[in-house]
Image (cartoon, rainbow, N blue to C red; front, side, top):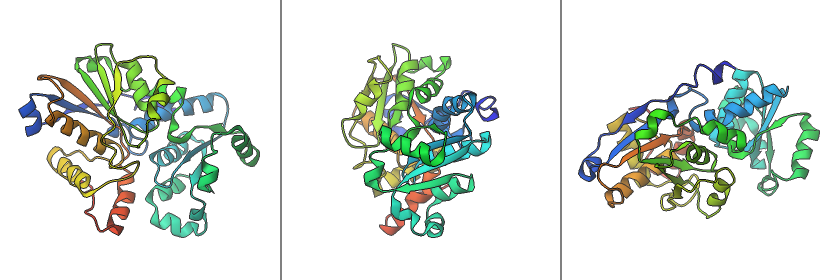
Length: 315
C-alpha cells in the first residue's frame, strides 16, 4: 500500500537550542515523527502499518478499533482506512454522544474528521467499554458487523510493536538516552527492542497508575528502560496553565507544535529533569515526537470552557 511504502522514510532529527541545555551541557534532538504523514502521523502511522498490511493480506475489508471521543488512534485509523480502501468502524466510549450525532460531530473535531474519512461509529457506555477486550464482546461485534479485523484500543499489539521498532535507525546510535511518551506501551516497547544495549530508554506515561510496566514487558524482554511517572499532570488528557505556557513558548521558540496529551508532557519532563541535574555533561538525548496534533482543537475547547489560556496553533 502506497501509504506504507514510499512514506516510510526515516523521520528527521531536529536539534533543539535552549539556555537550559547550554547550562547543563546536554544535547537534545527531537525525532519529527509528526511529519511522516499529514493525517496518519507519528506513532499511529507506525502502529497501523503492519496491522493494516495484515488485514489486507488476510482479505479483510473492514477494520474495527476502539477509543475515546478525542482519540488520536481513532482519527488516524479512519484516515488510513480511507487511503487503503478499508472500511473502518470505531467503537467509541460514551453512549451519550449518539443522542444527537449532528451536535456531537459539530463540537468534536476528532470524530468529525473520522466521520469525514468514512468511519462508522458504535457508541457504547463506559461500563460496556471496560469489557471491550472480552471474548463475549468481541464476538458480539463480529455478529453485528460480520468478518472484520480487530485492532485494540490505542493500536497496541505485536504488529504495532513491530512497526514501532522502525522508529529508530542506525544513525540514532549516537544518542545515549531515548525519550518517549507512553500511553498503552506499544510505542516504547518497539523503541526498547530496537535501541542499542548501550542506550537507555526513558518513558513518560501520560496516565496515572503502575500498570504500564507490566504492559510493556509483554512485548520486550530487555531491561534498558525506565518509566518517569512524575509528569502526567494529573492523568490522561489533563492539562494546566503551566503546560499550556510551556507548549506555546516551545512552539514560538523552536517552531515545533506539541500535542498536549503526550509529547508536551514528555518534553516538559525532559527539561525539568535536565534542570535537576539528572543527566551528566555531554549526554545526547533523542526525544520522539509522536504526533497527535489533531487533538489540539479539542483540547482548546476544554480549555476555553475552563477559562484557561489556549494552545497556539502555528508559529
